[in-house]
Length: 284
Image (cartoon, rainbow, N blue to C red):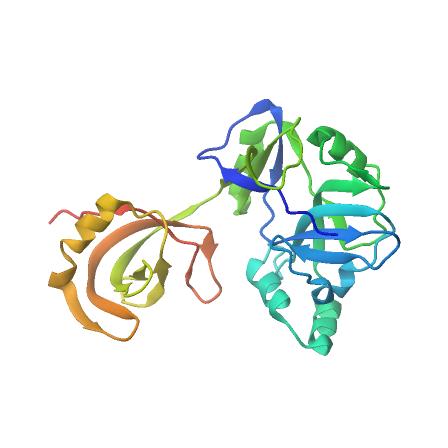
């Protein structure tokens, strides 16, 4: 049984508030786990794609008639949450490779909400009541655990997350009901990393600026954060910097410098989820 998940809006900065519960933001793969009438547990992505076969280690749970909301996540050798690894796992298709991956590097299901239990729809209950129920349950699976949370002290938690280099925190109103849409009752505060890049080209189709480092090495495509004002400034100088094209891109001399914020760097040294902040004007 699939239920469309509740989605987060974005807050610009960490805050503290007695009416909120704060959690670490788990950099994983959002999944809903559903087990109804004793059937095999099913796992669904936020877009209602059944991915049960991708995670055999999560197909055992002692509870019945339950729907849980959480994140599938894994860690690297240093113990840091590894988003790329979970995406690689999700992309596996051959059953033998999935089983081998589950044995060698099992994923964990980090649970932060419960939507149904023993035939009762819990979405209309306040969040703090749903969390109280969750804290009493035994999932019977060593790969399942509750996300830690703290009341009121969001800034304190964010400082800890920032020092550990983790993705950020989530702030949820303690009295929030569960709605299948994006809601300001749940907020994400991202621990952005800031860096400087050069604009080395732009996409011919959908909007996108090519980013490169000072040596001209490609770093990815910037699609977000660019205002009409920034686009106008860019279009005013791009023709002077033109140096070639192919089927998909126009290429420029990398002389336009920009500040971007990213979730982190990928293992390949690319920008993950880059967002344009502003142009950098260097004095002669």
